[in-house]
Image (tube, rainbow over all chains, first blue to last red; front, side, top):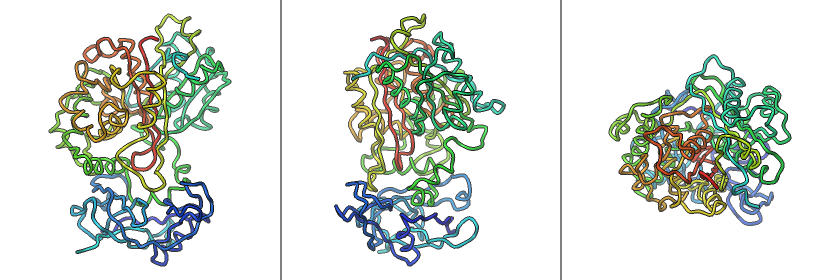
Length: 140
Length: 388
């Protein structure tokens, strides 16, 4: 079953990330001073304090840093258990919280290679929002 | 300037109830605050500083100072989740050491068992800059800690049986606490057979949900000397916020790697000197990682350390959470830091439940963890002595 897809509320600071997901791209901020790839998306470098940030397209590939199959949870997610909550380590360095989809939840392991998928999301009022960044196993 | 020996815990109180549908939140703050003052032999007119966190309703400490009828020249609403009350105690001890105040009251209250809005306010959390990148993936509180547990198991070979040993020790202690929500002893097998919530955490790896609260009173040496009750000196404190590490989070340690050494250095002792520990136990994995971080065992060896009854009072190598902790006794307002300090004070006073009272308990450590191990968390460590 498809996981809940509640659209995030983007703002002027993180808008390039969400413009990327709308077009099926993973766009990340990078510090213009020290080249650090910043996560979560923001216009300040947590490594050097610079507010000079440039946005670039990442590969969308990574490996699973940690994952858990959630089997009991309150609210709307209770309808989609079991599902996989995970941290994926991107090729560019950041570890991002996400779900692993398009797979048997029982088959997912730490270290597995994965790639980004962009799933349609909606706001509470039913209006379409920027797609969510999720990941699926890279087969083979 | 060190705070060592400058401030004393003179009064403590843990609300004895675990379900309080008919008490308002301000009433519970008042119930525990007044009782902690009475425990110290003081009253509201003695208080010159007040501390609470996001569980203080309305305008926080401003509303509660007015409600309680206090006259305060020092106040603090620091919010770090469940560790808030240890941070408050550190700030109170610092203010006392600087000579600004003499009597600080810290209160905690909440009603999550009854239900309704949690402390902190979801509106404020929803406006956090990280929210669009963390709130869309179905991370429950157990789910987040499960991510930490999975990674610890992956890197170090930690097992579910070892995590269960922590619950077994807590239940053995809660068996002697007539106020504990869960008073039955459980076995490793029973933990493993309880329903899986989020792999690898079972229901019995998770803490309880209770109404209630607690309070403590921290005083200067002059006030402590004037009281009949023996006050417990604060020997060292340390706090540290472990951020999400610029998006390179390591899930296998907490901010206790920094807060612990700060507290030990101030107290001028080492982990091997400690007779009793109160360790924040939102989940079994929280205890295991924290014990490693504080230096009671090597990084990655927490699983072995908690096995074979090592945490069980009174004769284990390092008795912990002798009230039954958050895992079995009480986790008021979904915040466990206050009760950690309270049980450490009981041990040092020799007032723990008799079967779990540690012999000759001279030095104790209380530790709180707030936020989530899966994202960002605030650790706060306090070392207390029976005497200076």
